[in-house]
Length: 313
Image 1 (tube, one colour):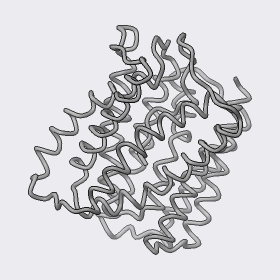
Image 2 (cartoon, rainbow, N blue to C red; image 1 turned 90 degrees about the vertical axis):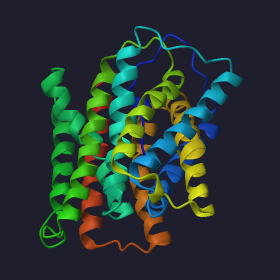
Image 3 (tube, rainbow, N blue to C red; image 1 turned 180 degrees about the vertical axis):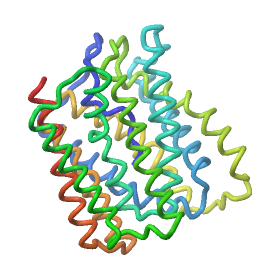
Image 4 (cartoon, helix red, strand yellow; image 1 turned 90 degrees about the horizontal axis):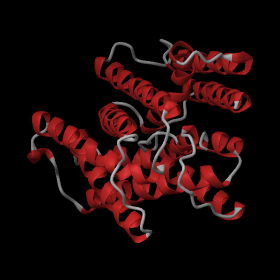
């Protein structure tokens, strides 16, 4: 799945936000974990029929259209305010356009499960960036988490378990790590932003901003003739737009505002685990010792970083 700015990292805007009961929120959290996790092999399958940038164009268009309909039904459609323009641009460009373009391109040569794990390293890059740019202190727990996460990456890229001789594989992995770093840059800005609208209200506008950027990249690098229409591709796009983008974004915002922060912060770490499980069951991708060890270290590191962040708050 391609994520937007993590809801748990945003400040609460002035507008009231709808919440649901604990049982409904936990059900939504489980749904997001499964739907976003399953979307990694779904995207891998879709990329066999549509190039990465055209895929991103279709996903953003469908996601934006769905969210506009939902917001219109709830009477929440509004133009972005001048105060929200900076975060509209940063998230729209970085997390909607660049992030999605990078993961779609990287997925062409990297296994879906590994891709999910690499893309979810975003908190590891947020931590040192916040220290350097925002003057935040690492603290013992976040330092431990960062060290564990870096150790997990070292395991994933060790010469015995990674083919450094294949330039396509190396580039694909680099793009996915780059996606995590790009997401971190957007989150750093999101943390500092003084929200005027709900994140859900800005999301479709951010997708609309990403559309011309992705469309331009698609027109310049990917001929339309490279798209191979099929019922399978239609199903993939419908899953990615209305479900993995629109519904999951709404659900993640609702969960974040309805459950304790520690529950959501640690709960969302289930997404790469679900992605690896789905890729194994559906695509037959092997869970190697290298992948398993890297997964455990990175998830432990992410958990420690998130807990350190919550302790600071």
